Length: 98
Image (cartoon, rainbow, N blue to C red; front, side, top):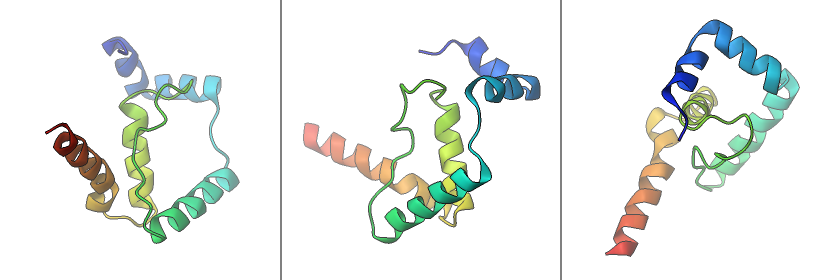
């Protein structure tokens, strides 16, 4: 579990800048390739779940998941489309448990 003060630190602009200085950011070209690949995956019907990269250095649980949802919507998905794979996954998991 990530302490509350970590989230609070990265909610402020100076905290976000420090985070990006330490971990870096994607270049515009990298972001373009990521979005193109994401669009191809989405267009062929492969569900994309937000938050599946937690545990990776620099990925903050919750904060990073929200950013993934923002990127999905910026790429043209509706908010419902961005959330649907997660909702479907949990519905399947719950039904499998009986």
